Image 1 (tube, helix red, strand yellow):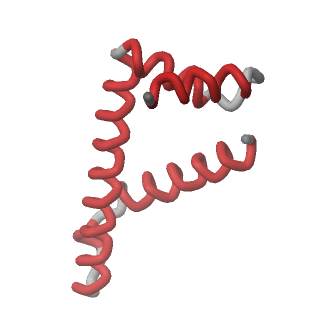
Image 2 (cartoon, helix red, strand yellow):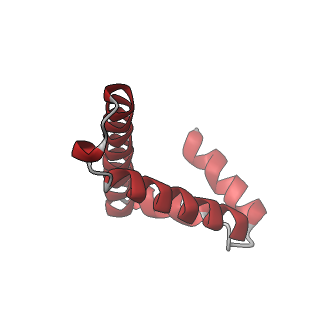
Length: 88
């Protein structure tokens, strides 16, 4: 759990660094194109994550799903039972 949060934080920092990169300061056109494409992918990923979070947090199913996916919860057998019930 802590390792995944550390990885997510490192990824966020790397993405932010890439987003704040000034394209005008890059002289090599290939590197500039790469950075520009990378920025577009980061923004698309963040937009998708934001849309998913908005949907899951605003619906009853989303609230149940978020609870079931919470790694801090110790109710594994109950989670599994509810998951099976929701799938069928």
